[in-house]
Amino acid sequence: MTAARAPDDDVPRTPAPGDDCPDPWVRAEPTPRQRRRDLYLGLSMAAAALLSVILSNSMGSFPLGPPPSWPEQLGWAVAVGLPLVWRRSRPELCTLVIAVVFIAAQARSSPETLASSAALFVAIYSLGAWGRNRRLAAQIRIGVIAAMFGWLALSATISVLSSEPEFVGAAGPLPPFLAVAITSILFNLAFFLLAYLLGNSTWTSARRQHLLEVQAEALRQSRAENAERAVTQERVRIARELHDVVAHHVSVMGVQASASRRVMDKDPAKAKTALAAVEQSARTAVDELRRMLGVLRDAGATDQALGYGLDQVDSLLQGARDAGLTVEYKIFGEPLPMPESVSLAGYRVVQEAVTNTIKHARASAVDVRVRYLRREVEVEVTDDGRTGAVAVPAQRPSAGGLGLIGMRERVAAHDGSLEVGARTGGGFRVRARFPIAPADLGTVSTSAATASA
Image (tube, rainbow, N blue to C red; front, side, top):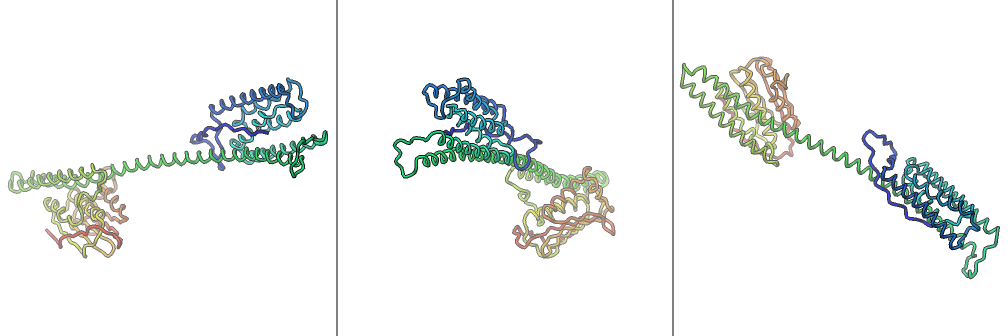
């Protein structure tokens, strides 16, 4: 037998979503292109076998004895090559048919051995590379190999019994017949072992390729989901910042404009003061919007770049004072080192709570307290307005509760807790707690001492 190099296989296609792909993995059916290549291979192998028959007869080379008739020789040649047409679609049938034809042709003393040996090698290889039932593929290959060695032993025995072989010039240390037997066994063992292992290697490579494609697709989907999630988070961030900046100042402007309208005729001086406050709030809002938009345009910037924190709460409350509210601001405990993000989140909670008081509560006073505890900082805003006045947005976030949603998002981002609800004695309370780990490093919120107005 002579080993032949098996043709390269195409990369297997990945089963489409929804296709059954049980465990262990089952190789996909060959593509139309692969089937066409197998057709060409089967026809080429049959043509090579026919050519081998012609050459053997022309040289008078009949190693197996007197050959059968020409039509029979040509029939065996075609029968041993054509089954390769199904080597990938029906590898089990292809291997069995070629093995049977190979033994039958040699039993009939057909002189063609070169092309038939190559066809047998390709068939065993293909069964290892494309056999979808791995146990059956292994059993068939082992069975075929065992049958080949059995036929080899039987034919050698018949040859010895029929006539004593002559070994002219033999001079080695081993008996000539033993040397021939060892040579034949080693050659065929290498032949069949190579076909067997090469088929398994190709199947393993195809399986790894499939797993890589599955992992690549999962990675692509994960990247798409992460990109979509990042876009959503950025939109939420922009919406939250716009709400925090615009809602507060516009609310103050609305209150001042309303007050100015009511006293325009009775007290022009107060109206002028109120309009000045509206103008100042408008300028401040524009400045903050410009600063915020500058931060948003910078891909590497974060919310902390806006520069707000708990140390600026007193300045924030000036808008409430201008709106006519009595503001009381108190700090308890020593300011702690904390991340700038926590300081900004506390500032935004106070800003949103005060804005809701101005817009909804019809309150006359607001009390803001910042407490620096051992491992957390707490901000609390209470007012004496209508009980539950700002609870409506919390119950209907789609109708106007974006501020409360933003507060919850900011607090949750720092593993804090938020309490929002009516007070027992009247009014409304917003209380947020932010944990601070001992190892946290950040800017110390250096607020002023107790301030009141």
